[in-house]
Length: 613
Image (cartoon, rainbow, N blue to C red; front, top):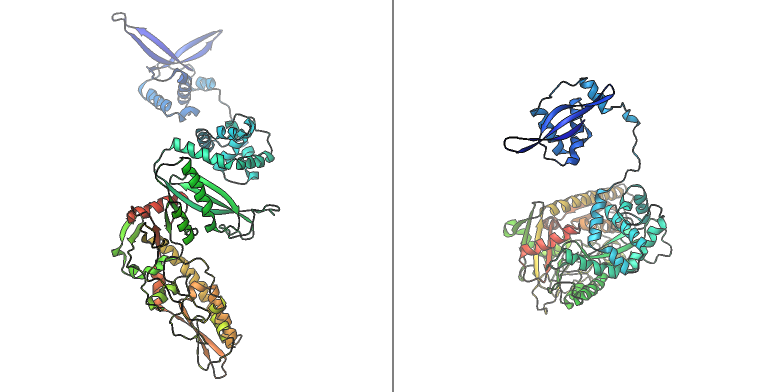
């Protein structure tokens, strides 16, 4: 069947009318005849679609659905035609004739097979932006050939669509993706070596490519807002990495401590677009990388790539050391960070006042966040001695070590060791070392620079050190012209997460203590020195939770330890629980309000999947 357009004319008025008919051809003897199956009225569709509509109507009349039913416009027309018009004459052989004209075949669907299926959707988007950023033109300027630029486009888009290794990218391009059809060169026969080689060629031109991309991005997405987020991550190798100087063992963020790593430093703007990148050895210290980034920003500023407003650098707490903050300000830049040490612990008084004294705002998930700007008079007040408030703070935080009282002795009754012998006591030259733990550095693994508050650590003579600060200090020095703003924040979701972590640590600590206590009760450990050593090891392995408890060793007349008793420190527990979900954001952007500061940090860190809750 087919659709025929027919024109008629009104003899009186001369007006022409157009209508359409569904017509079928049939053979009668040696002649081919045509008959009108139905009138369709006037169709307002592209003549190219007449054939599709005719097939839909033919199948409908035969009691079936056509493959073209997916075209909603044609389906709608067919529905209207079949409901509004009647068949003009009885079909000569009715259903059998129509079925014969449709040429139906019986097919065993289980025998159908599909081959060489390729994905294309995400690849089209990646290819479109690749072309809009004019990456090919930049690669040609860097000396790559036409074929190399084609391979580069395929590899870059493949890495964007399905991030993986060079070897897996080669397999993806050969077997899964239609990217080879989106380039202007025949790449169907390239081997995996070409994938490895193009990555090296692109990396050699990295600096000029990054510069060109910044210019192209500014043309496509102009903005006067300049916020830069800087962070580091690492990737691990599963091979032997022989001869690779960058492959080093370090702290794997994916917990693959058995593999060598490389570190990647990345600076992006507020839109998530990259500004600078650099590959470092896997054991690279995070704080030491900031100098290279600031040098790159300075170079971009000199070339006029950014607006007149100087950028604000947003950093993770792992990079935000005193020296780095001073370095940022020496470049005349602003900064915004979550303080590196747990500065919130210095504001227990503010946290204990309750959420009613905070400003409530909502995050992107409509969850409540409570914020308060910290003034100069807030924080832990010090009088030259180790006070109760600081004890609670230091014991609750995992970063600072202080004695519980300034006049306590560190013999067998050592608070540091957490071992108090209730009964006849045994003195010995090794008492401080075997029981104390902290005297030997057993509990001094927190080597990160302390930021944002008073500190008191043990001297070799175990006397408390004098503190020169009477409040939690910001990163910047008091001599700087810009006033430093600190925002105390409370997140309910973060609180729930930290509570869950603490419960897990509590369970592990309790299990380890019960095991040690059972060994003492059975007489496996009874010597005071040995028991003290075991307690020191227990406190070292579970330090953040162990600070909340006293461990008493009960001895008998024979001066042997008979029993261990675990006693909770209520004040320390209360202080720790008060700190759940709390953190401090610091900035030298004096023009921003507290809510703006929080949103600025959270909005930009979320773009890099590093949500601060």
